Length: 380
Image (tube, rainbow, N blue to C red; front, side, top):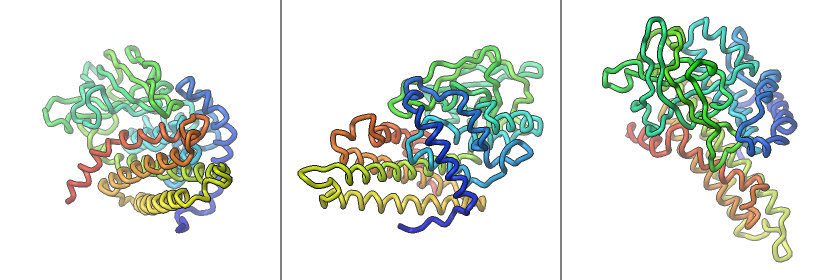
């Protein structure tokens, strides 16, 4: 419908390279990764070789120094084809940002080049059993002992957790009772004594993306692993990055909807019922028209938010609205796609069926959509 004007020729060339990488090195293995519940470790190294990791990080720290549209291209191309296994966005656009924005020079020079090359996989550990979206109620704590922190507690639903080498952990470092002022972000290396990972969780969808529970049994790390100049800044650090993190979900959601639409259109053009293609029936054409229109609306909203990201002007309210609307959109479009596929829409060898079980999580992670409504309502 409306042309997209965000991307330049550099982004377009990058998109072609990303498509080749996904077609040749991701999708042929994705079904096997779904069985083992995580991608192969060497894929991270290969992505690093191609410059697909930490793209917005400056060159002095191993990145390419690109804008966030390069990250957007990679996220879109993964979502168009249902490549939900590689957790590149969490690694490059969340974990690396925390280290770059809040880390010391030593932390940045040590970890960011390794993350950009794929030598180190990053994860962020926020959610705990029983806390959900309520970060101020977490129980994991870091207690000072000499020059170290002793970390105890557990985290759940951690993307990249099973293969992670470095984890940004949200912990309590104070007991003021105010919640947000007690939180800090601390780096924990996977090899620390007392740190352990459970097997990948058995999820309904997104089976190739490793998601697991992490345990911290009196894990000792130096106080120099604190992100930021002082304790108690964790909540404000999280809030500073959350708008972009929620827009990431919106980017993924619209692209998922587009991929589902494309697969459904192709199927209805090819599949014949009562002597004619399914797309020849008015109901099918009207449903496809509705899907196409809603996706176009969602894409324009997301693209406008991306323009604000490039200017540093994206608000929490706009990001919450984008995440809310597009994650709901993805589920609607995918559900219609399943219906138009008929019985085959329920078969996992068809992309639309995989999208059906993969897309539902978008309304939950990054803060549930009920939380998004609450954030938007605060501005009324």
